[in-house]
Length: 336
Image (cartoon, rainbow, N blue to C red; front, side):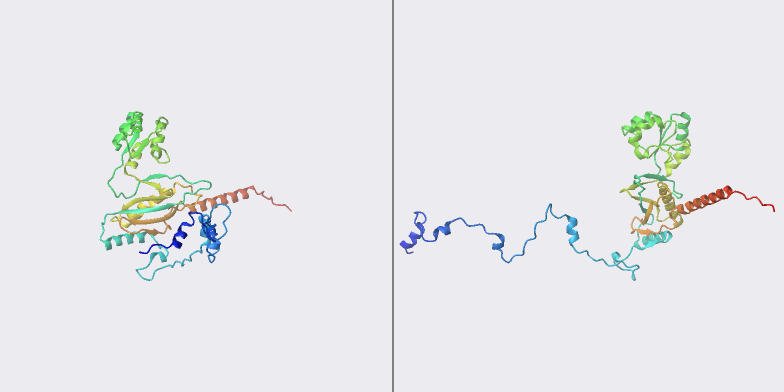
């Protein structure tokens, strides 16, 4: 390999020894800051920054064009169709129960499976909403052999004996309070007589909805009736603030029995909202353990509250007319 020439060596050593060629100072100086516009002369102009904070999600959604949706069709022409293209159909109650029985036969599922209902509620009042509630109703046709555990509060020995004979699991007085507060005693329902209820106030926060009250028919003097009701009753409760999901029958029961149980539950639910307001039940879906849900038409299921109100208004109008006629002065015949 040939040795480097003297000219190449001078070029390499010139900056170190202070020998500066013409134009070398400009190349060794610090580079100037280049703007984005000069670096990218053909780039799109940036949008001016918006005053204040960045765009919110709502403002971004407004800028996006809304996607047009196809109008839903009424009825499918074939048995196989896309459900999201059609409105969900409504069925009469008897027709819906018959379809559930047919689904069970076609799918070869268990014939004694439970029938469920999903009740969607309107909890709104004038200035507030109804609090989530729970209820217990005696069904006309029982579908299970389950018996609820009932506790009776009483200090009278005769009433305690009647409660035991009626089928109460636990009977006692104030001595039960300590065991209940310490979770040593638990029951499905708590029943009390009026004489002892003022002494049970410390249990109100513990029992909450299960605390005895006249509204729930768990406070009264007829111990055998209360015990029998709560031993065999069907309990339901509001979930997710506005939905009740509960079972009402078995699929192998006669259609008339399933319908009777459903109406009993719906009528009991309607008692939690005063009649002047809109009906509390807005939508009803019935299904079995293995089937899809069927929307049920509410005609003939809800209690006839509107007709009763109309009758009351008619009676009030008639009474007002009678009062007006009674107040009119009777003109005496003028003798000629």
